[in-house]
Amino acid sequence: MASAERRPGFSKRAHISIFTSYVVATGGIVLGVVLLLVSLFSPGSFAFARNAASDAARPVGEVSAVARNGSRSIIDVITGYIEAGSKNARLQEELRLARAKLAEAEAIQDENRRLKQLLSLREKEIRPVASARLIGSSPSSTRRFALIGAGASDGVVVGQPVRSATGLVGRVLETGRRTARVLLITDGQSIVPVRRIKGNVAGFAQGQADGTLIVRLIEMGINPLEKGDLLVTSGSGGLYRPNVPVAIVENVTRDGAVARIISDPAATDFVMVEPVWQPMTELQPVDGETPP
Amino acid sequence: MGRPAMALKGDRLPGEDMFQRKLNRAPSPVLATIVPWLSIALLSLAPLSPIIASAPVLPPLAFMLLIAWRLFRPGMLPLWAGAPLGFVDDLFSGQPIGSAVLLWSITMIALEALDNWQRWRSFWQDWAVAIVLIAIYLALAHMIAVMAGTIWYPSLLLPQLLISVLSFPLFTRLVAILDVLRRARIKVLG
Image (cartoon, rainbow over the protein chains, first blue to last red):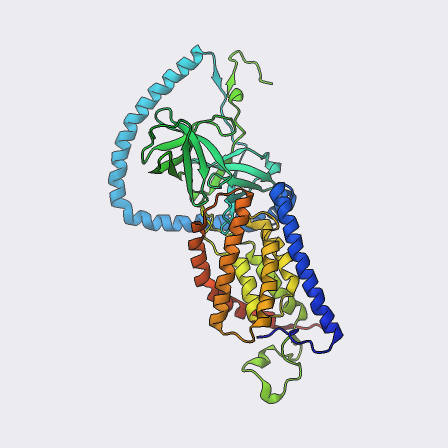
């Protein structure tokens, strides 16, 4: 299989055309190097092109998001029938425990409210900025991004955390008009301050691009983490508000752990974009003054 | 490229008259040119597919189709086709922009050099060439992603490489189907 221009013979025109195509192709390599250097040294410089492309291709993503959710529910229905009996017994047992826990939680919540009143603090409820479908991801790259179907025109701003009903998904990295690019917490660039839900064990969770996070503890010494521990956001440093579930410890390492994320983007249809959390916005004076 | 328009009678391939002009139907030069470009660009939209992956598992589909077109229908894509097609891929793939522009351009020149060096090849040799190219491409793309901020984790690429290697023959079939589409007779007006 030889290409047509393999042996151009003595035709000068053919020779020149081969030469030109090599020059243009080499130009492509040079262009690639230049673009790559620019996007490595200032990662946001081509955001406009990416966002315009995502906005244009948004309908494709919306359609396939609907298809994904539809196909998943079919599989769920079938497996649901198969597992119905054992699941029912397990759920009843869980329900019994959960009722007891709920009563306990109500008492604690009540106490919490009273204590906060004593401190004259009032909590501001967090209203999501937007809720949107996940319409795409980066399935072949080792970077972990997702695309959501809400953008600047829905009030989404760069830096806002994104969560699903079950846990933290990531944060907004770039916004288009009707789409936004989300840095998932499993990307290597994402670092989330976390703490263990029981006891005061704080650390950082960095993504590993394979659906797990590396957890590094702030305090060195004996590693108190155990397999199955639930990690939630600690809220330190702002950005992510506290107590959003992040991951469950899977393997304990010498100075931390490897944890599996709770909110797998593959099993998520709708996500919520929340406002950037700053510790001071949550605590307002009780006498009705509006914050600046 | 291809055979002369006035082929001798004994010089025909079976089924070749599928693609010849007939009454008011003729192969369209526009279609013949645009199908390779369009098919590769469409596969670059794979990140918008129903699969939301928490790890890189999907093969680099558009890159594999580029190699398949280039290996099985040489001369369809010009030598410089890697840059524009790579740019489209970069817009959606999540890699830093310029990554595919660079790597796809190098791939096209490498395949041209290979064609000049190797006089003939069989299906198995084409597959071997594709395996080597995909492995190098995935490794270099990961290095670029590491430079952009992800952590160095080469074993993450192994499942993806395995799926790519096994699915490459499907791309050769896809090219064959698209090639029939490319040369299909469509209605000529006037």
